[in-house]
Image 1 (cartoon, rainbow, N blue to C red):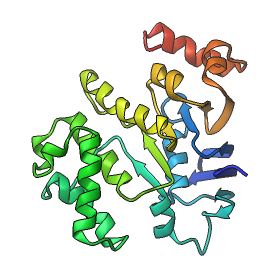
Image 2 (spheres, rainbow, N blue to C red):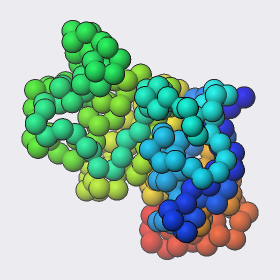
Image 3 (cartoon, helix red, strand yellow):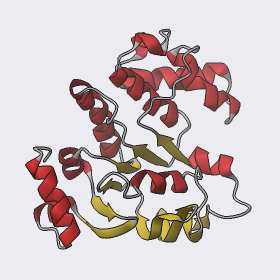
Length: 247
């Protein structure tokens, strides 16, 4: 049984069908990268997995348990499935440390001392323990995104969803964020990434899924998707990426 099972998932906004029947499985400790043109449904799919969007049809399961539809405990789901967005969404009136410990204290019921100890360990891991008392506006974009990742990790999720986490960053800041993802992948964290960083997807992914117009048109190991894609749409997309110098 896969850790995440996505069966026939459909998502509509009014009459517009964003996801048209997505089938996808993610194994434990696997890194799955979602690639494809803007508007293909990558971000929407991640939001559906995390329960931020309701689906019109199909089912998503985590460890075999249904996590979509009526009766689902969304708080429990979001403890198990963390999500990080391209916007950092840090609370500007709170220090870095306070941003990280807020959810573990309020949602998990951790004591402040316990939450702070774990937060400082995580911040040290990403080289930002010396920024614990700073406020977000004193940090670079890359530092803020690293804090946003740590804030999600502080909840101890079994799955991490990353939605275009480098797209709002200046190019020189991208690598410091991607290095964290590399480390998490090496530690066995199960991750799904929607990304435009094709070189990174090729390097870190166990499986790459190409989405187009709300469907998974092709999936496979990165060496196959990037080296010998079978689907005409995948080939056309990667040709444009190569011509733009992004792969």
